Length: 117
Picture 1: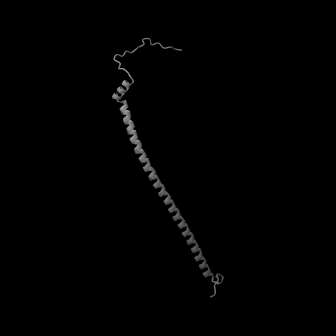
Picture 2 (picture 1 turned 30 degrees about the horizontal axis):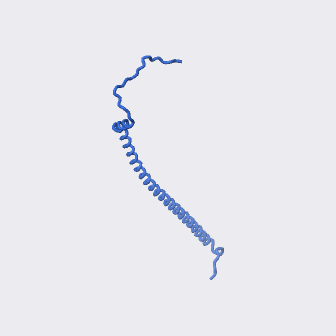
Picture 3 (picture 1 turned 90 degrees about the vertical axis):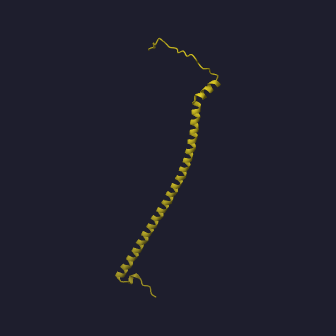
């Protein structure tokens, strides 16, 4: 069998052969671009999904920490209320050997002069 070279083909056959080659290379380029776009979108999707999952774990951990802090805050508020109660204040006053004052006298100053420069 003899190989036919393109230079011996008629002009319209060479043009047809060239257009088939250019169409084929165009489709190959389009296919490569589409494959690259799909790969880029897939990688972006995986990265985004991973980031959202990590944020979910962080949020759950922060909510757990918040509930622990809220419980501790409630305990501290209860302790403050107990220490501010009159019974607690009276007990601490007795332990410090303080005495109750019956008669209170106030000192008042009659002269209200002020030094002026």
